[in-house]
Image 1 (cartoon, chains in turn brown, orange):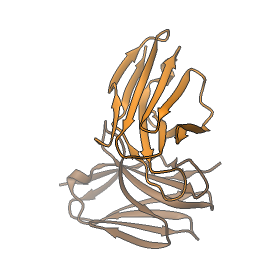
Image 2 (image 1 turned 90 degrees about the vertical axis):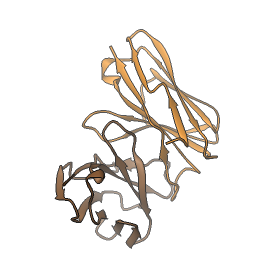
Image 3 (image 1 turned 180 degrees about the vertical axis):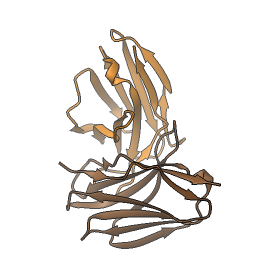
Image 4 (image 1 turned 30 degrees about the horizontal axis):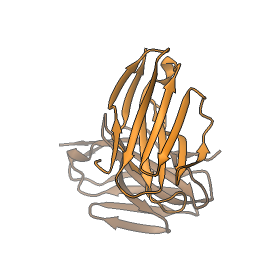
Length: 111
Length: 114
């Protein structure tokens, strides 16, 4: 069974710090990974996708993928209180129709 | 959020009722999905449609019946639900299935079964 694991948190960081969110996956066939942000009572919003080993940067966000170690991470630089949300990691193998989601990590950024 | 819309946003129904959830995407995508999100549980994929054909049915009870009349519209017909079916039901769409295609979610329907 394909699994994506995340620490449920909450992860608490001070405003302006770097928040590091981690995700591990069990299926070595997983090729594409996605990070979603979900505010309380709202639907998931796509932040970033990553397909190749290494880092991918988009503004304050950096996604990191290490297929050998089967982990994906999301770094948020200069964290703001508005970044406080649950962050969902999802993975999919290239042949599959299904995204497998982790349970999410709740991030709290304190002013 | 305006790319994928869902109605109604909130629904309360009894266990003997029949209701339908509607999803519409305005992104020109070919694939649409239904997900269930319950408290304290990961997002669960229910159904996948690609070009109006169901390509995935993730062991969902028959009291949930999907319908995809065209690539822009997706319905979830509900009947004789149980209280444990209370959850946030999310629709998503993507340009295609598999590979690197990104999925975009609608705002969801908050369902309460009494």
